[in-house]
Image (cartoon, rainbow, N blue to C red; front, side, top):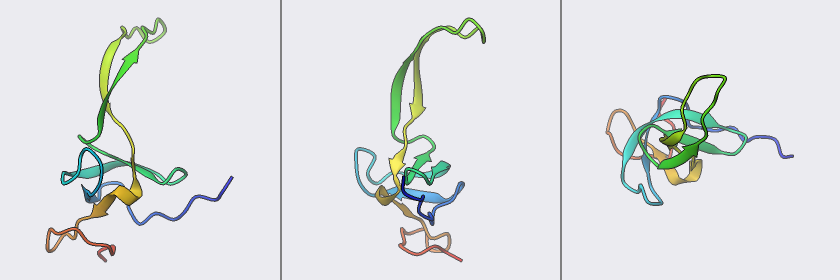
Length: 91
Protein backbone atom coordinates (compact mmCIF):
# COMPACT_ATOMS: atom_id res chain seq x y z
CA UNK A 1 0.00 0.00 0.00
CA UNK A 2 1.21 3.51 -0.78
CA UNK A 3 2.42 5.83 1.93
CA UNK A 4 -0.12 8.53 2.87
CA UNK A 5 0.61 11.93 1.35
CA UNK A 6 1.22 14.95 3.54
CA UNK A 7 -1.95 17.00 3.58
CA UNK A 8 -1.96 20.78 3.76
CA UNK A 9 -5.42 20.79 5.34
CA UNK A 10 -5.81 20.43 9.08
CA UNK A 11 -8.68 19.97 11.53
CA UNK A 12 -10.37 23.30 12.23
CA UNK A 13 -9.41 24.95 8.92
CA UNK A 14 -12.20 26.78 7.11
CA UNK A 15 -12.71 25.54 3.56
CA UNK A 16 -15.04 26.04 0.60
CA UNK A 17 -16.21 23.13 -1.55
CA UNK A 18 -15.26 23.67 -5.21
CA UNK A 19 -16.85 20.56 -6.79
CA UNK A 20 -19.80 18.24 -6.27
CA UNK A 21 -23.31 18.69 -4.93
CA UNK A 22 -22.15 20.99 -2.11
CA UNK A 23 -20.25 23.35 -4.47
CA UNK A 24 -19.87 26.88 -3.10
CA UNK A 25 -20.66 26.03 0.51
CA UNK A 26 -18.28 26.79 3.39
CA UNK A 27 -17.52 24.87 6.54
CA UNK A 28 -14.88 23.80 9.04
CA UNK A 29 -12.92 20.59 8.76
CA UNK A 30 -14.03 18.15 11.47
CA UNK A 31 -11.80 15.22 10.55
CA UNK A 32 -8.82 14.57 8.24
CA UNK A 33 -8.12 11.15 6.70
CA UNK A 34 -4.57 11.32 5.25
CA UNK A 35 -4.54 7.63 4.26
CA UNK A 36 -7.40 8.15 1.80
CA UNK A 37 -6.70 11.87 1.13
CA UNK A 38 -10.20 12.87 2.30
CA UNK A 39 -11.66 15.38 4.75
CA UNK A 40 -14.96 15.55 6.64
CA UNK A 41 -16.48 19.04 6.65
CA UNK A 42 -18.98 19.69 9.44
CA UNK A 43 -22.53 20.19 8.19
CA UNK A 44 -21.74 19.37 4.54
CA UNK A 45 -22.12 16.26 2.36
CA UNK A 46 -24.76 14.79 4.67
CA UNK A 47 -25.88 11.21 4.06
CA UNK A 48 -28.61 9.05 5.59
CA UNK A 49 -27.49 5.77 7.13
CA UNK A 50 -29.69 2.94 8.39
CA UNK A 51 -28.51 1.46 11.69
CA UNK A 52 -29.53 -1.72 13.47
CA UNK A 53 -30.49 -1.70 17.15
CA UNK A 54 -27.53 -2.48 19.42
CA UNK A 55 -28.36 -4.46 22.54
CA UNK A 56 -24.97 -3.85 24.20
CA UNK A 57 -25.13 -0.04 24.08
CA UNK A 58 -28.92 0.16 24.33
CA UNK A 59 -29.24 2.25 21.17
CA UNK A 60 -32.32 1.75 19.05
CA UNK A 61 -32.14 1.36 15.29
CA UNK A 62 -33.25 3.90 12.77
CA UNK A 63 -32.02 6.30 10.13
CA UNK A 64 -29.29 8.75 11.14
CA UNK A 65 -27.74 11.66 9.25
CA UNK A 66 -23.97 12.01 9.22
CA UNK A 67 -21.26 13.77 7.25
CA UNK A 68 -19.53 11.79 4.51
CA UNK A 69 -15.88 12.41 3.55
CA UNK A 70 -15.00 14.67 0.60
CA UNK A 71 -11.82 14.25 -1.42
CA UNK A 72 -9.23 16.87 -0.47
CA UNK A 73 -8.93 18.03 -4.10
CA UNK A 74 -12.57 19.13 -4.01
CA UNK A 75 -12.09 21.64 -1.17
CA UNK A 76 -10.09 24.85 -1.09
CA UNK A 77 -8.67 26.56 1.97
CA UNK A 78 -10.03 30.03 2.85
CA UNK A 79 -7.45 32.72 3.58
CA UNK A 80 -8.29 34.11 7.06
CA UNK A 81 -7.32 37.69 6.18
CA UNK A 82 -9.14 38.12 2.84
CA UNK A 83 -11.86 35.46 3.38
CA UNK A 84 -11.29 34.22 -0.21
CA UNK A 85 -10.36 30.72 -1.38
CA UNK A 86 -6.62 30.28 -1.85
CA UNK A 87 -4.23 27.58 -3.07
CA UNK A 88 -1.51 28.22 -0.52
CA UNK A 89 -1.62 27.58 3.18
CA UNK A 90 -1.76 30.82 5.18
CA UNK A 91 1.20 31.10 7.55
